[in-house]
Image (cartoon, rainbow, N blue to C red; front, side):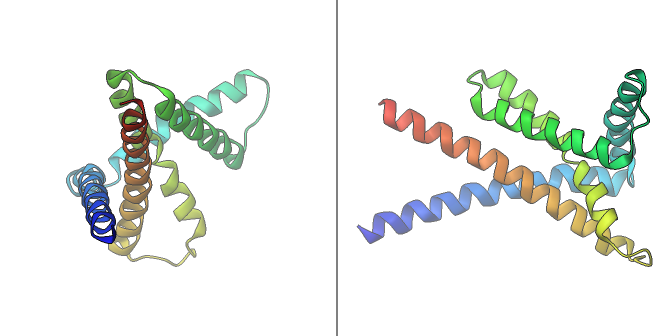
Length: 153
């Protein structure tokens, strides 16, 4: 019995490792090719849209309000990803989640001291944190779907 448990644990670790490597590449390649470009594009589109939306409602939004709404949207999209059964929509939501996870960069920049200047260390922390979050989200979704299909059979 323990041999089967160890084998299933190795398969789980292998799948999670593959997803993590892919997620690292998703965030590392754009960072290497175009330094901080994705951060500016996603931050401008999502953050700028939220700020303009708040301005239309008559308020002057603070950055914390925009980031809070961004995180709530991200959580909602992740729950939607877990609930959907359509593969095309799931893959589309994975791309949206990967883009929305750039909010993590803003939280990392807020936590760092003002004199933090080691670009490579900061980039590594940003890339690793987003990759870990994305891989856990994807892996949990795959694990949950596999578990549901096994109980149906």
